[in-house]
Amino acid sequence: MFGDLSKDKPAYVRAMFSAIALRYDLINTLLTLGRDGAWRRFVASQAAVGPDGRVLDVATGTGELARHLAMANRRGTVVALDFCEPMLRKAGAKMNTSSRVGQVELVLGDALHLPFPDETFDCVTIGFALRNVSDILAAFGEVARVLRPGGRVVSLELVRPSSRIARSLQGLVLRRMAPALGGFISGSGEAYRYLPSSVEQAPSADEVKAVMEQAGLRAIVIRRLSLGMATVHMAARGA
Image (cartoon, rainbow, N blue to C red):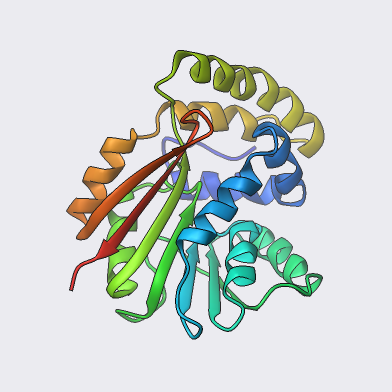
């Protein structure tokens, strides 16, 4: 249905998210046992900028993280970027029906080629995207490029936890619940077979930190959430 991942990962990922866009939020909530909202709220709290600040949410999907950012930054501007048009349409519909959301600008674009000038944003967030890009170093390089000196980056990602109990729980959710429940609700079982394999192949928290440093980001702090099932990396761009 989605093509050959080994040949063209961006096209595969775009087709996959296009197929599940309408049910993406519900499935995420079910498969994270309701924790995804708390994780996003934490990211938004760490991404706070001044009243006129500009925040970029890379790979925004249906705009859930952008929505939390906008609620926390009503006087500023949030730019929500994704390369999947159906996901952006869902994000736009969501913003239009929420009176608590500040100014959000939706942009169709690629995380590896951000369509913005250098030093445009005070903060850049990335949620659940590193497993889906074909070049993590290039993605963080683009993030560093569009950040102003001293600007902040906050990345949220699903990873393999170090705790045996947490690994067992995650394996149950991703390997058994995800394909069955996700496929039933969205009609796309393949998309939710991709999810567990992408988590297993994801870089560790320390590997992500090393890539961020290679991209020119500094003062990196790692925060593990929900028994280590999700990891937040916070960093700053040097002068």
